[in-house]
Length: 442
Image 1 (cartoon, one colour):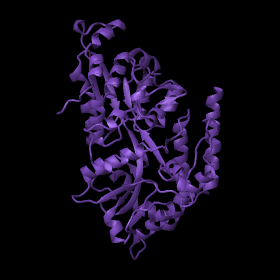
Image 2 (cartoon, helix red, strand yellow; image 1 turned 45 degrees about the vertical axis):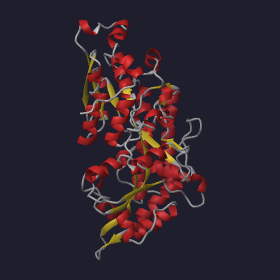
Image 3 (tube, helix red, strand yellow; image 1 turned 90 degrees about the horizontal axis):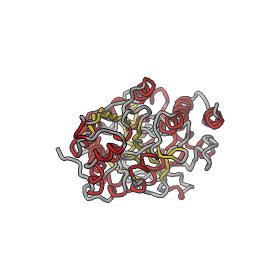
Image 4 (spheres, rainbow, N blue to C red; image 1 turned 180 degrees about the horizontal axis):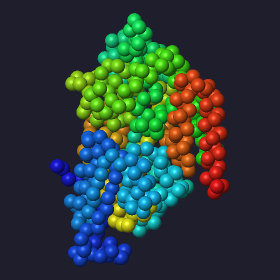
């Protein structure tokens, strides 16, 4: 097992840790047993979760004043239950960016600014997109551990079999290709599907709708962050785009065909790997999934998100997600927990974890590290994530509720229960009320 390496400057901070802890009121390491802290990671599968445990507990190898116990598959319900009971895990790494603003606003996580100042931690080592989803109301509430970016992923064999030479660059061509790649048997049942816009939503914020809206040039909030604009014309156009395709397929047959898709994503039964699905919009971690689960010789591609043909200015538009690392309210060893978070932000652990789960590094230094996996699919994601048109889901006090409302309404609209305009009007109105209540202190 390779131990994570650290820059000399960071090791200099970590090895004399007993001195700094003593200055903070703790007992020197030679006079007491190590301080025990618990950290939780959202990654539940053995590959990603196992890598998290290995790398997090690597902290125990480079110093002796703090002992870390890491856990995988820790969900938000468990984390908040621990906070409410006064017995929280010390540090939590989430798999979605939509929880952090609400948790910060509600006091479930600690403001990291005092620790950043005390430890002289350099926030400028973190890339802007990762810092953006870690900041709320001007303060830092997270040290992110890797980030996500999303591209169009496609099955090259299915494209070749359909006589399609190249992946689509526009949203219009994507629908043309998706229809050509969709097949039904004599009884009208799907045997393969060109695109499934609603599956795998848990990889982001439980829906991809906000990604589609960004592809069409939509903005979910105004520049002040105080006005919800989810019913903007481009936002409505994006929802109508995916709804029209599902209507063409047939919502009932679409649901039947994709009923097992979410459960099969991280497995050899993945729809793309079994030639049941031709295209999906998803993230760089699929590089690792292909390595782990796809059959030998599987051919795939990943290309920039499509854009409307009449909006070439939107070429290169992207969306970032990621894994906020938070110091939970009620931690009995906050300083020690923050020192662990500093370790995870150093170059060795970041590159090690990025290579293990194929997420985009959050550190500038890691992006150019010669130790970063050279896999061309993965490197294409890494490069795309640094584009000037990459944005993130709104960081507002009701981000989690906003994501939930979009997901619920999307399901209603694509199944013909309401129009795209009416659905997004309702989301806009309902979320605006929630946001106004937080701003007024109600």
